[in-house]
Structure formats: C-alpha cells, structure tokens
Image (cartoon, rainbow, N blue to C red):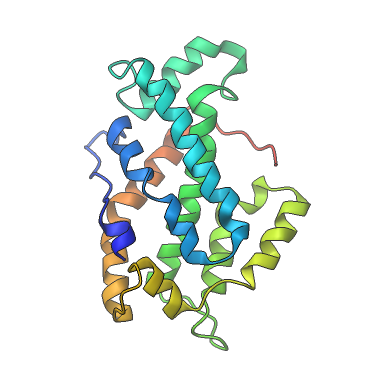
Length: 209
C-alpha cells in the first residue's frame, strides 16, 4: 500500500475546488499502480495518465496564477477555444485523465467493500471488471473492449496485488485494506469533484477510441 500512501491527495476545501499543482503532483505518482495489475494490456491506461498529466501541466505552467484550480483551467479554455472546446487543450486531457482515475477509484473501493468471486476468492477479476465497466468500457471501441476482456483473465491474485501495492512487502490483507480506505478519502473526493465540474460545465464528450 506504500505505493499509494506515500503521495496522498489533499483534502478539498469547502468550495470543492481542486488546486492544480498539488493535484498534478499527486497524480504523477499513480501510473505505477497499473504495473501491479500484471497484464501489459493496462499499459495504455498507464501511458494515457502520464501523457495527460504532462498536457495539463504544460497549460498550467504557462500561467500558474490564472490556472490555479482545475475549474479555472476549464473556464479559461472555454473562453479561449470557443467552438473547439471542450475537445481541446487541458480540458480534453483532464477528461480522459479523470476516467483513468475513476478506474482506480472503483477498483480500490470494490476491494475495501469486500466484493469478490465466491468461487475464486483470491482473484481480483470481479473488482477489475467492475472498474473497467464503470469507468472505461463505454469510451472504448468493440476491439479495445475485447482486448481488455482478455486481460481481465490475466488479473493477478488478490494476495499478489496487495503485495505489489506494498512494494513487495508481506502485509496482512486487513492492514493493506485499511490503508486503502484512508487513501480513498481524499482521492475519491477529488475524482468526484472533477466529475461534478465536467457535468456542471457540460464538458464531457462521448466518442470512443
């Protein structure tokens, strides 16, 4: 669990504004999470997260004061790009980034909620499937969906996944789950706030890749 706990997300303020710089710093440490899932089919999600973080950071660095929060980025780009928005700039990058973050959120929440395959209790296939179905499936073409379907059968054992999250250390499952719960508090609040922002500004797009 050290993989996630070493770089916690900040608690959101009362107005639920997500400050850009600390958000990007925390997210930049998440791509190795997908290595814990074993299959190379998750490599594109890992690469997408890294790439989209870099795109958002490139926009942020042009004017840190103007782009202090993610909401300020979307509002400014809506004005800057006109009819091309939201399929432009950091707005588009954050749209895809939030979907990768939702995958992590749903997977981890499913684990701490105790959801498992009764016939194969040491598999995390049911958790990974739920995360993919809720976060990514509808945004993927039929071909990509089939690739992920195949990857789900290669998902690691629950015990191996927990060990990978703990950077190879042997830890008791309940201790690992308790740390995941703590990580999810600020992480889930942040992901949910970004989704709320996109819904409020009607900034989501439904095309598939």
